[in-house]
Image (cartoon, rainbow, N blue to C red; front, top):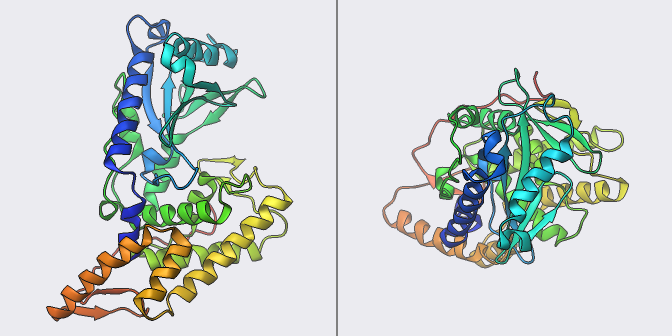
Length: 362
């Protein structure tokens, strides 16, 4: 049932198509022959949730974003001042009347805020020559170059789940503007990706726009670290929540989340005592809610619980699941899994199990 629920979390074709069009237009503007950036041979790519395919449809007042990397073919010797590179990209955007009106300078990106629950974050970057796909990006607050490895992170993420896609292949396939790929159906992405989507949606409802909400990168990293290779979302989500809860209980003070591709970076650095207390409450309550969900009987109770957890689109998922269940029952091909809510066809599917990782890199 949660697999069907994830289908309702995918961006609509209209919404994602609009994001694709805007991403491609901005990329082409930055890389155009008449642009001053063209002397630095800009390479336009995307990163973040769009790259690892964990974007969720906006909820309430929330927006979803796509991160556009503008990788310039230069280095810190030729451009020691990171703000000069940042300003170069910002200046090119400002030459476009529409982008000038939409743009806001952020700490590490330039945001184009479109109406319609979407914004595009343009991240200026330069290669770390000799270090493969690793990059440096400007930090406006500190006025320094900050190391980053979005493609390495994506490879680590994909390595935690039974998929063969590697972000490094996309990085090496150089193109002036890498097209933003069409959004996939939930059934076409891996259980770990769907688990991250469910955690992000529950986060959205629990915090309801509050600034204490955990960052998506923190949730994604924790989910990936604790994922055990389960084939079904329900099992994967319960495993992840249980193990995060255990890690919290075994940690003195605020949990540190090392970036798996740069252990000097703490992805939980945004927490303070108040926001971390709320995060602990979020995980504890979410785990209790999922365990209680598995004990419910009756479609009305299940629907009500799912709507409380993941929003009103859950009702549609329950309706589809109930119809599918009736059809399978009539064809006498139904088997039951251990949980009272989740029902699966009798023929099981084997899945490569990912060993539990207690420590990144170990």
